[in-house]
Image (cartoon, rainbow, N blue to C red; front, side, top):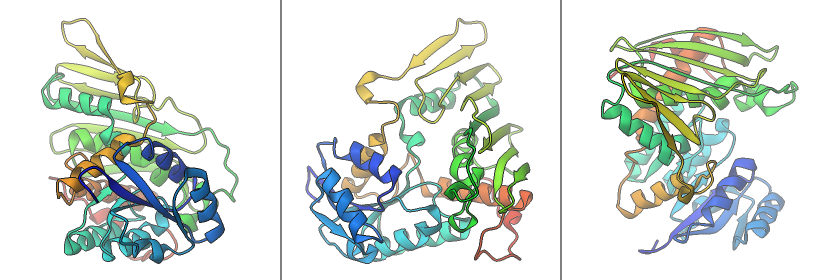
Length: 344
């Protein structure tokens, strides 16, 4: 790493890795120096597409490449613990896709490993780095709508997804909750912290993953969060934050919004829109820029996506799964997923 350039490695070659790399190479202070896949052919194809100098058919080779400062882990989440752990142990900083891991136990292991080696680690929760979402949070924190009373958010895809699809594959951590529900849960906890109690219901597939899930999160403040995710119906991906003195509505795409509307009691509605200078709404460059800022500053975690917040979200996801009866292969069937909540 130099004062001007942070060198990246890309671990995995799927759709999200392609999207991230396309945005990353547009940043003048980022250099992508290597890519790895379990398939050398896939890594070489990816490298040729993006002009990346080195391609590895071995995750460990990427982790051991000392020319790399930060590794972006974009494998299925069932492999996050292994892939990110390999890189952290080798001395690389890591940006790891969401959901951070399969469960909170794995997440705690990664956080402990990062802290042991003094490496930067961040979940790729790009929503938290989005400029308009940051503006919304600042307004809420400044009391624009008073004390937050409720948060509502949804994320659903119409499908249908066949049983062979990764979203329905228990071996790949399939289901609506971990792939989609992580967004509504993370949005609620961005504004309210960790819940003290949870109720949840789900419709499960024949494979044992959740096709749709709804949960109510209860907070010690008296606030409630209502979150919903689905693989069987396309939702508005809307969100609403209601306070004692007003409300904020995001009509669509709450995790990369084009606009939101602030309603303050006794005032005209105020519309806030995304700044075109920030790039496309679906740009992943903001999280990449935050990683590079933090790494240059010698920080081991980001204040925008703190590790304790990531662990809190994972505890909530575990608790919801425990309540609706979703377990994945290899998980301890006797482990009480519902006992992990530790509200601040």
